[in-house]
Image (cartoon, rainbow, N blue to C red):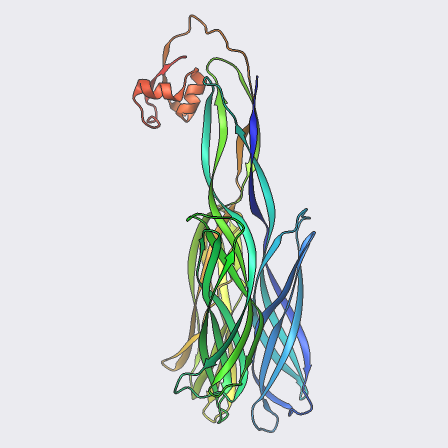
Length: 498
C-alpha cells in the first residue's frame, strides 16, 4: 500500500552571489583656461555615487561614478585653487545562468583617490573603488509531508528552525535640507569638497511594513571669508518605511544597505549650505520558519519501504560584530591639523580549516597647515586582522566605515578610527527526508519470540534506533523503563517486543 505524500512549497530568496570587486579608474584632467598652472597638489578627495544596476541572464551590470575634488597651490603663488571632476565606472559580475530575474544589492566605497600633475596644465586622477555585490534569486523548495500514517507506523520527525530571506526590494528617497552653521563656526565662502556617508541606526519589521531610520553623515571642507581652510560635520536624520508583500511576526528582521545615488551641496544661504542627496535603501526581510521533516519510519508488524531525497535550505546560523581600531601617527612639528577623513579598504577574508582570518584596513587622509600658513596633505595606511571560528563556507558582511579623529599626543599627531564589521555565516546543509513510503501486509508474529528482551543502548545511538532494531516503539520502552529522555550510556533497558 502506497501512502500519500503532499508537497509543501517553501518560497524564499537564495543567495546566488556574494562578492567583492576592487576597481581602479583613471582620468587625465586639463585645467580650464581661466585657472593658473599647477604648482603643488595639496590633496584630493572623492565620493562614490551608484547610478544603476541591471540583472542579466548570467551576470549583473553596475554603473556609477566618483565625484573628485583636487586642491592645489598655483605655480608662482597665489590663492588656493579647487578643481572638480567626475570619473564614471562600469562593472560586470558573472554568475551561473538564472531562469528568473533576481535582485541586486550593491554597496560602494571609495578606497583611495590620488591626483598627480603631469604638467602645469594637466592632472592625472586615479580613484580606487570597492563594490560589495549580493545577487539574490527567487527559489522554491518542495518539502514532502506524509498524510494520515497508520497507527502501527512509527515516525521520526524533526523540526528545523531556518532563518530565510523571504522578501527583498528597495526604496529611493531624496534629502533636501537647508543646514545652518552653529554660532561660532566660521561661515563658508567657498566649498572645497564634501562627502556623505549613510548610516542606519535602527531597522525593524512591523507586520506588513519595514521601517528604518538613520543619519546622513555629512563632512565638508571649505574656505571662510579670510581664505582659511575649515571643516565641519553635520548629521542629517532620515526615516523611511516600505510596504511589504507579506505579513510578518515579531521574529522577522530587516537588513538594509544604503547607497548614495546623487549628491549636491550649494551655498545659497548666509551662514549655511543646501544639501540635495538621493539615496536608495536596499532591503531584505528575513524570517524564522520551523520546517518539519519526516526523517525515518518503520512498523513493528510489517515491512516498510521508503524513498529518500535531500532538501537544502540556506540558513543564517551565526552573527557577530567585530570592532577594529586603526591608527597612524606623524610628527607634529609646527603644524595644525585642518581636516582628516578615512577611506576603508574592502575586507580580505582568507579561509582556513574551521574558520577564517579577516583583514581590515584603510587610508587616513589628512590636511595640515604649516607654520608659514601654507597647506600640505598627508596619507597613511593601517590594517588589522582577526580570526573567526566557523564551519560555514560563506561569510557575508557589510563594508565597515569609520570616522577619523585626530589629536595631539606628545610630539606627534595621532589619527584614529574605529570600524564595526557586521559578520554573518550562511550555511546550506543538505537534510535527508522521506519523500515516499510503501507498506507491506501485516505479518504474523512468531509465537516463540520473547515478549521482553534486555539490551544496552550501546552504539545504537538513540532509543529510536534501538526500538526499530528490536521491533518495539520508543513510547513502549520509555513506559517500561520509566524514562523521560534518552537513557544513559551503557544503561540496561527492558525492551517490550510487539
